Amino acid sequence: MNEMILSRLKQFKLSGIIKTLDTRNEQAIKEELSYMEFLELLLSDEFSNRQNNSIKKRLAKAKFPQHKTLEEYQFSYQPTVNKRFIYNLATCEFVRKKENVAFIGPPGTGKTHLSIALGIKAISQGYNVLFTTVNEMLEELYISRADNSFKQKLKYYTKPDLLILDELALKRLNENSVDDFYAVISKRYEESSTIITSNKGFDEWGRIFYDPVLATAILDRFVHHCHFVVIKGESYRMKQQEKTLNAISKN
Image 1 (cartoon, rainbow, N blue to C red):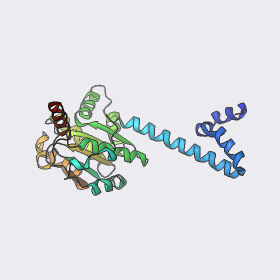
Image 2: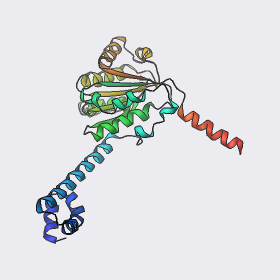
Image 3: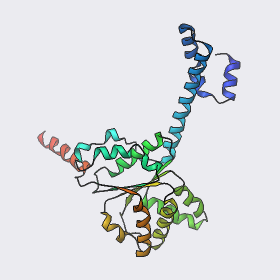
Image 4: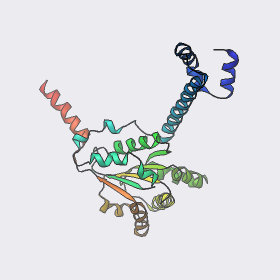
């Protein structure tokens, strides 16, 4: 590659073209492409490179604990999960409409897996996503009050197009936690989408919150535009463990 061309491409931050210029140049010579066809290929490479970089950055910012996809989810293990409904959610129409999703079911049934998979689909469509557990978010908000960074931290949780709150109801929330949880839900209401996973049935959610008035306000806002996915199957992890133990016992 000509040093002057390379220098200019770096100056204009056209890294996608830098990666493919030599290959595209050989292709253009062999296939006798016109200048416009050659330019079109280079611009396509640059566009694809920027898209990939953007997805990588948003995946990193999402802070997923693992990379989980819908294709990896074992629908055969959970017959109560409507596969068509989940794939309809994967179109991310609910994010565009600023609606919510709740995954409810026993531990090990794939609630977190499905929430991450939908988050990854949203990122691929250009949305900003953040994953966190309910306890981690509330702890961060509580700490932020001590150093006067609460507004900034609250914005961190309310700004993403899709916020995934994992493991609601692992423990009952105290007075401060309920206030902060309400602050997040109320600011996101009809402004952006939220996914919540919980091992407690929806009828038990009210008892999680310290203040019944705030509990009603939180639930009212979250449920107003919400898709519920109730999973009644057994733990996938337990099934896998049983298979392993059975295999060991046979040997």
